Image 1 (cartoon, rainbow, N blue to C red):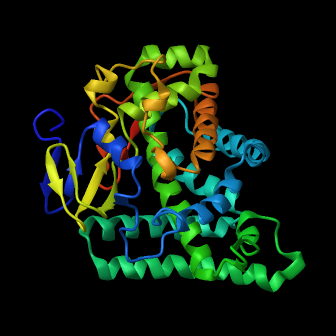
Image 2: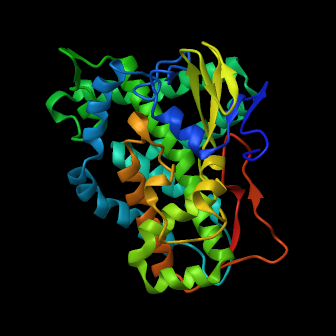
Length: 358
């Protein structure tokens, strides 16, 4: 598609962009390609400047180097404990015993949420994914309301606690202001929903993709065991090869021509990260694992004004869990005759990942 039809139309995804060059153009032109694509409030993902700018400034403070440094020991502790509990010397279904539990525990720890939410959130993720896959608007509305109920309950607990409220991110958001007013509940719920939906599914997918890649490429697994300092750049490169997030949406706000196609105001487009990050014009052989690539061209966390603000947290989490996995095992391998089951779009990674862990 990149070579023959880089801008293609379908009823399911509307106008899809396959080439790195076209995707980057969209990311760097928010005036022509709007992020306001949903009927739901989405702070700040679904906003354009100048509104986006105000909220983005609030969001970025929660992913500062200081916060990451403070959270790092907690992150490593969760990763180490989960990996130490893995059964060794046999077949393990990694999605269920590591990828999903790690994503749930790490997100709840970061936000200050109780462990009692782990299981409800696990079920909520499944329902949300199923409703999204079916494009069942009624079910999607119900799922959104269910999540809002969890968050509003957490906010109520912190309000009632007053000065005795836990010193966590969820409580901190209650004191944030946009302009001269405090964030309202709808805005806080939207922020936490974006963090949770984006974090839980994507981090779980990343853990599975990374573990599977190392199982499939013994020489790279050996290299990283011997030189764990290479993990940050290696993780980004593996996730360029196998995207954990397939696509994102935009709306046309002024007539444009892109990839030889004339698009009109109101047209919807889909940015295919998974294709752009494998564009031969930029990366050569897209399957080749290389540690010397120009990482500025890697769209794993997006680009432009909407580049993922949570990238520092995601990188910390993924480095922590992969370092734990390599430190507490001696071998990760595929299971002959028991192939992984790919996740279904809009998800990525694996819904089932049997691996041999030694």
